[in-house]
Length: 443
Image (tube, rainbow, N blue to C red):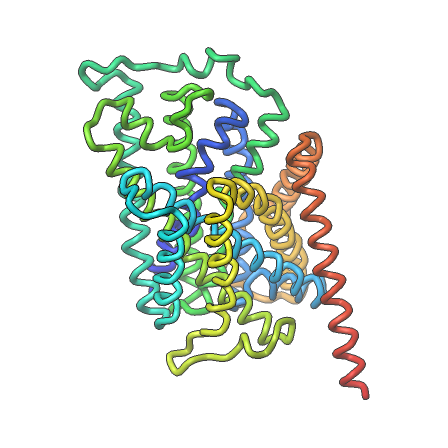
């Protein structure tokens, strides 16, 4: 995989359902104050990306932060993080497929959502069963298209807000003060919105996974981290600002916020175009996340923390069994959509937010431990995170604040407690499996 493909993959995995669909849900939850949620989460993801970049440049591995956590905190901790991230991604894969199908149904209501989602799952399973070079090129052009679309959206939004579009009145910043003010749902709304936002940024860490299959990983990872960080912040916070300024937080248009903004700008046909671009964006994220999920479970199998069959490679060095295992849930979710229309996606979006926080926390703690070890040993690192250890400490403090705020809101508290229970169950099962494996080896 080339450096340009790695960079665009980082963008592709993060600009998906979280932005095109989840942004509307976030504004519904917090009102314009969702910008606070995005700023907090954006600062955190910058720090996490720098920490991951440092570790990935020094040790490119398909297991990425799972391997780093294992080195820093022990094998059970590393495997737990790996399985948790894999579970998160297989849920996200299903969410992307259903989200893309749902959006496409608004402009092409010929086929049912579940059938289109099923077709998407089948196509991208086939794509991921080809060589990584073909996959990387496919993802590059997918991601490039949606980046261009978001830039165009930001330009239209700016023109609308500044009153540069003839015969269309600018709302100015009135939606930040009307309809209950900037934070109509208070701190609880910001907390609820924060978990929607965390889901939106989830997947960016896939850059550290893909580093293992990239030419000149040390240089490529550094470039990808620098590029992905500022572009995501501009795209996300810029887009959210435009949407929150143009649409009241009570608007039904937030179900498809990008299309609603373009409708408000009076551009004929633009809403349909942006909806189709959003479909491409979701499918691009599905593609990248399926890649990440398959490589993570492949790495777990290599470390004997998953069934060995998942480590099998084809002649083109594709972990085919791992790819298939990573799409089973997505296919099952399409069946659930058939049984429970419009009920599956909201549940999926709510599930994965707090798992991102656990993964990011493990990455920061691992970087803190491994960097200190490297500095003590006088080891030269190809990429060094600036501001260490203070910046890592700030990231951990932000995580702690997010957890504290999350425990205040009823919905987010349930989500957090569920995630803690999942972590404990996975860690317990892995610890038991490792003890049994050690006992068999000793015998």
